[in-house]
Image 1 (spheres, one colour):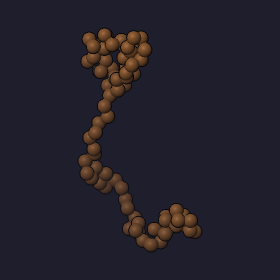
Image 2 (image 1 turned 120 degrees about the horizontal axis):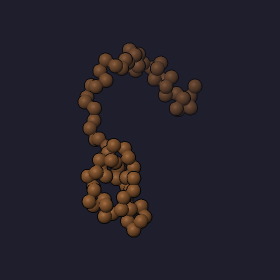
Image 3 (image 1 turned 30 degrees about the vertical axis):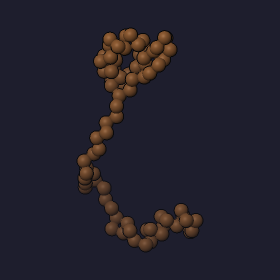
Image 4 (image 1 turned 90 degrees about the horizontal axis):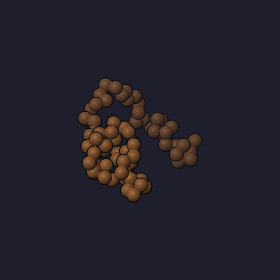
Length: 78
């Protein structure tokens, strides 16, 4: 949706609602695109432990054999 500056001043809450729902809202000044309304991203972080019991770590994840197998290619070794 494209709205001019005057319309945006009088209908800001409706335009913001449309942007929050995913619609592209562009505000024009003198007929040219000037700004775009975009929804804020949530800064909430998942609670610590939210993946508990969903990830399995191999008992040998830190063994020398596994470490060498993963690190050596990065260091140019075979």
